[in-house]
Amino acid sequence: MLTINESFSPRAENIDNLCLKVRNNFFNIISSSDIFAIELLLREALANAMIHGCKQDPSKKIYCSCCLSQNRFDIEVRDEGQGFEWPAFFRENQGDKKILDDHGRGFVIYRHYASSVKFNQSGNVISISREVSCFSQEKMGMENKQEMFFAFEGDIVSSNVNDLRDKFKSLLAQGVVTELVLDLDKTIMVDSSGLGLFIALHNSLSKMQGKLKLVNLSSDILKLFHTVGLDQHFLIVGKK
Image (cartoon, rainbow, N blue to C red; front, side, top):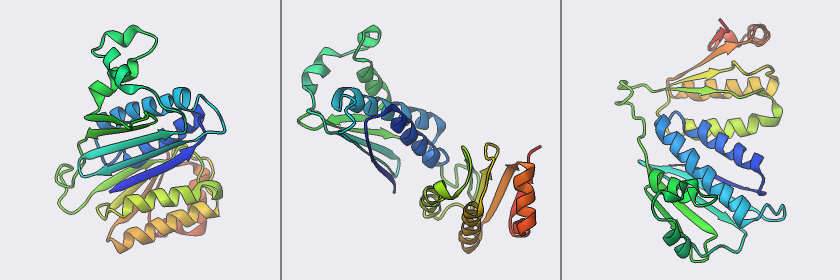
């Protein structure tokens, strides 16, 4: 089971950050079409919580839980608003005819992309489930090995290393990753904390008889790894 729990103020950038976190944590575990559907459902629920539930009041909060268990992905979003009369709203928004209206599109999305949608009695908590296709070692054509690919979105420095460490800890805890490929194409800076992250990942993978591979390193970062001698411990490849 892999779970993400977050709480934040009702701002659009916070929704973007959470969706990116979900995408990065699950994109190598479930199919790309399921990732798209999950993010679409998540964004719809969070946007409703922000606009209609919290009414963008910065003093209120949105609470979100995302959980992958077996072949099911569950989303729960709760806001500190008063809720709404969801049974009546459901009745008014049956079918796809509302797609051109100013409201009601979310129910069309829920109907086509979710396996089930439930509200609590007051309407300020929505629970969404979707059946998903999870990658397995057999599906990937590997009997004893699973390669996982992760692309960094920016620098790997002291301000974000702890979050990255937690993310990789969750991924490696599943015990099926024996080769981790990290893409540094968008990374300009790696500091000593970032180097420590790679060393920790190397050590964790080594205990699992796995290996670490870094690709698309800039010339400066490639030189840094050569300078400190880390190229002697795991494979690093510069940009082509």
